[in-house]
Length: 171
Image (tube, rainbow, N blue to C red; front, side, top):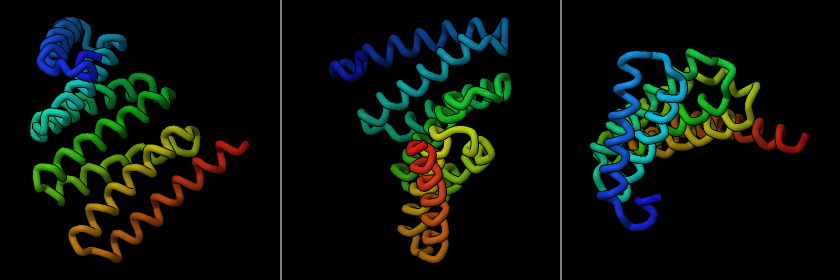
């Protein structure tokens, strides 16, 4: 909220304090689900602050922190599709930051790291939609690198997830 109010310094300060508190609790209880979720959400918001301040390296760092916490939460509760969807979004955020840093190979690889949650797409429209976004991102980066055949395949994969999403919303 502070970032949206045009107060990024306050948002960063509050975020750093919240991350420190959650980390302190996690040092004693490494799988404390509420602390993990809080730290992941705060890290995601700090990545957004970094995006708005044109700080792509900080964006990648915070997004990777968020993804790490979402991944642990997904291992603790593999049935939680919202956690898996947030995990995908955190990686997408990092992939976009890598693109902004001029690291297209790393960006495409980060987008495609989300393939590890593909099995969850059958059970979740949210996961399916977010995978669509990952494949579109990977296709875009790959096309920009001049690899059109690979980009076309990635885009076809993206459309498969999008069609799954559309089908499931019509039921």
